[in-house]
Image 1 (cartoon, rainbow, N blue to C red):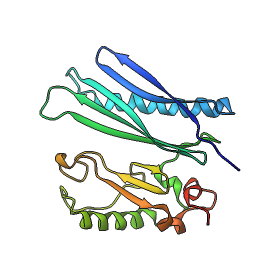
Image 2: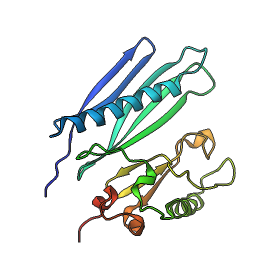
Image 3: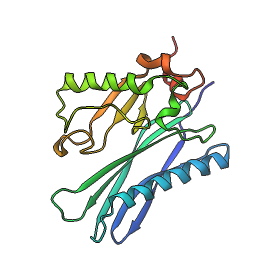
Length: 201
């Protein structure tokens, strides 16, 4: 069955100190699914603004989004926000959301894998190897990912990422780690959304 990308338009949220652009899904067959996805996107945007806003300081916030995957009924996107409060460094945060555009379900990382699978260790080991190969400087010993670490889906890859200064110095930015979905297919349920990304032979 051919599944077309969902329609996306850009919405904006402006206040005297906020200039934020975020995506809005439209044209889905089920209006309740569309409403649910858009509610979650908007809610994530509000949470991003709240995290960027510094207490007792005027914070000028700007933000935009990137669509990382829009195929096979899987929508994965990031919201990128920057908070400038005239400090030494602006604060930058990236949030992500992955949804099934047929059902409206929003997926945490843990929900992508089989129940009881050791996905945390497997992904952590793969990332530790990449850290060594890419010589990424760390703030301390890498202790692995959190069960619901930040991620997004990009075509045939699962991208795990960390916020600034979460595991590495500020100047490193956001460490991103591409995990080929084919390499972790034993951990993926047959009816899971990651399984849709594996190319058919």
